[in-house]
Image 1 (tube, rainbow, N blue to C red):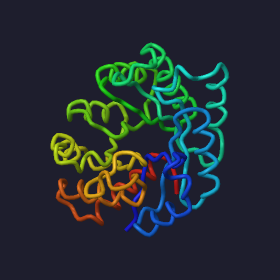
Image 2: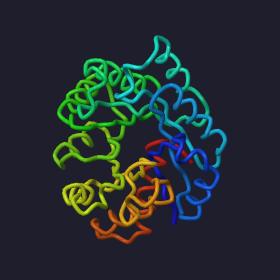
Image 3: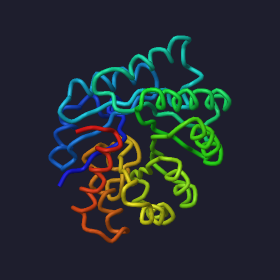
Image 4: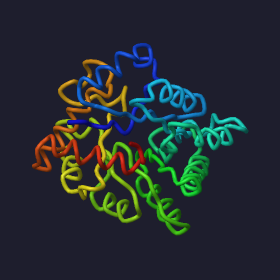
Length: 259
């Protein structure tokens, strides 16, 4: 039994200070591979460094997350484009839109989201979508992107409704679920997770955030805790844990084109 954590932030202080042990605990828990996702130029560089350091188990994604777009310097985007060509980089992002936080002008977020989608289409690397309190806005840009050509992306830590999830799938995206799916008040997310087509389901920790039950608030989240999210979704889909682990691992390998 092996699992793949499709979204981590291993460069965060709560994890990077003990990174060898974090990786070891993941492997001991059956989480064989993880994707470290950048949020700006510096963390994208760190993600690549981590992936190259732990080349037997970690891959990287590079991008500028919507809440950091206003902090980007003039040449930051060019650096992201260059980083996308580095060894062990398997995706661009995270990108997307966010109306919960208001530090970054929304039109600037849209500009950078469009850049990531276009970079994905140019490089054939998948893109990773952050979405918070703005699902209709995200859907508009995904539809526009699909008019230019095929989309290959994932809705990370999905919290939207089933109708939108199914449209995302029709547009060419996968749907990923994080620890929130295990929370008592997350019946709606579990219902979506139960009904997503089997070949489009991915799982993640979003570590060090969103620790799943029963580890919520006990310690920073980390890839080893992915087993709890996997067990929850396997239960709502009414399939054995091992079968769900194999399913999502195969999906992740195909999506990111990793061995």
